[in-house]
Amino acid sequence: MKYLTVCILCFAIVTSVSCTKRSEDIKIDKKSSGDSVNKEDKTTAGDNKTRAVSDTVFMARWDGKRVIIEDYYKYAENEKTLMSDTGGYDKYSTKLIDLVKKYSKYSEQTPEYLFSEFKPEFSSFTNLKVGDKLYLSTLGGAYPIEVTGYIINMDDMIGSGTIFYATANLPAGAKPDEYEVMVSSFNNNMTPTNKTGITDQKILDKYKSFLMPWLKKVKITEYDEKGKESITTVREIKNEELKLFKGNFTGSGYVEYLAGVTLRNDPTNFTSLIYILDDNGKVLKELSPLSANNFTFSSVEMICDFNGDGIWEIITSDGYYEGGGYNFHKFMYGEFKTLANGFMFGV
Image (cartoon, rainbow, N blue to C red):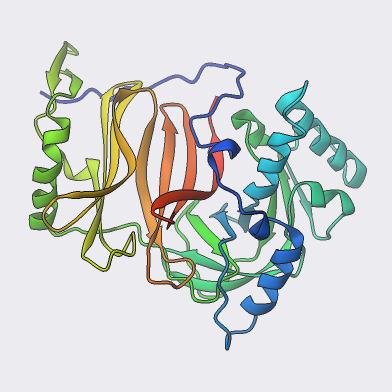
């Protein structure tokens, strides 16, 4: 018996529906989303003698040429104002096209437009200014960076997500993976991101045994070598279906394990959960409760201590079979808060 690898053809469906968390799900502290506080954070973040602490965080990504930084705080503001009335997302994208036409030569055949200077209209799409100093957390290390410009990418319109990004040069010594997702903030003591987690098979097997009772009634579709379909219950958790990290995730002071399971029930449905467990398998907190045979999923992507408080933040990839995005979660006041998200895509 084996799973049949299924190729899903993406149909040209025009929709603005996304499975990632949108602005109404993100608790935005206005103190950390406006220009005034960003400037204050920037001052301390540039001084390595002073520990800079800010809950303002941005998802970033290496696009093969530059680091692109998504300011979702501004995008969320636009969702609540510009995109909330008639026209919706089309109004947002039209304003960006008008912006390109004003400062560059627009063509439907040209997807990317680069700008090296801050223009007054850019304040509607980002709080970040050229020259702003931030820190970048990557799989290989944490580095200081500086905003050098902006990019408008019309190709990203298909996902009904952000089109406007700030840009930065790749820091000296950084060697990112292809299209690596990163974390950026004003904090000068960020840790590198950790995507690997625990690889010790004995520990993995131990936590599989803790998690299996939650999954024993979940149905999955299997296919034999001739393509014959059969429905069965989950019998095991494969290594590639489990992400496990050891660390401090809630500030409890005890040993904690972050466990994320993502199973594919069939070509378009998933089962997922993300729990914080103790050393005996007791569930301490749920970041994402069990969602069985569902159209959407939530998977642990990586962890990062972005503000140096010793508590790991959690980055998840959330979506469905034709798209998704990334969410950044911090444990605050007894629960997980989603501080930012980014890089949505889908049809």
